[in-house]
Length: 84
Image (tube, rainbow, N blue to C red; front, side, top):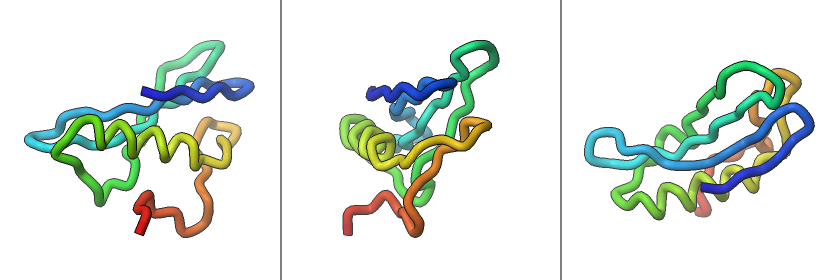
């Protein structure tokens, strides 16, 4: 799990098991009050290995350009999450 701090939010990355494969996610948590919001990262990707899914989520967190005022992640245009 990786973390990035923003003025009003804390962003974390991770992976969760969905059936027999892992999905990468980001969780954006408000600093003052409210509940975390989870975003699936590159929903067309899934992983057999949890470490690979967590690494992809951490890379997406690093690639994120910032957050909208409501905490929605901002990615570069045409971002796919794939290295190829």
